[in-house]
Image (cartoon, rainbow, N blue to C red; front, side):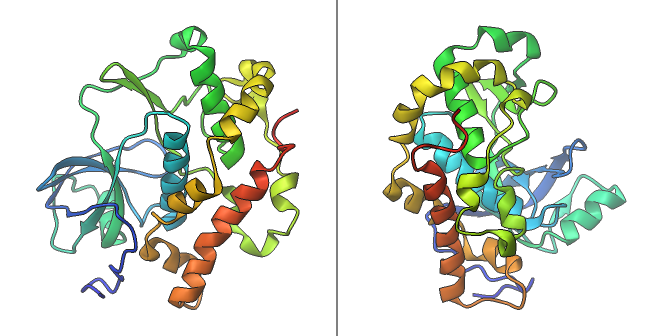
Length: 267
């Protein structure tokens, strides 16, 4: 189905979809400029398709969140958020008015974590090896460069640690023409920039255990969650259902090659 926004809502995914009734607040930090929206199902922290990285960042969010859950990490649950031109907003700054106008259609929402707070830099040294190595291994697999001492992208809520904000992962998707057969095997990872980079020496003992948790069926399940309307804008000139599915499978194939032993991100 095509909405008044001109964006297809044919979504081959079991991620639920909710209509946003109102924009409540906005995050003015970082390039993704997420907002909090109100729906019939409650409030959702929402990343917008009209932000700087477009729907590619939303694809990365879905894939990395699914892989994180496969590893037993806590990630806010995902929903799809429909934003119509008639949406009401408490944010009237020109920047956000324009961003909302560019985001009509389907966007990506996340469970709103009540009482959540950022994990502080002084807490990092006390975090257990299993959690630290899972996060480091995941970020190395998906080439996420956005989890540093200055920007941990981890939160504490409901007595759990949550990993968030994965839109900077999967950088290869911005230039598919440059992706060759050997590309997944060539892409190493700069561990020393990571917030858990000092745990890299322990990663080898966790490597086989973690790799076994990401099977081909799990990869297929993860990429199946990507809605067509997030892939369509990434394919110039439009795309048929067949070519969209081919692109969905290309993500799985890249990551599967990267998972093959010896993994390029394990010394």
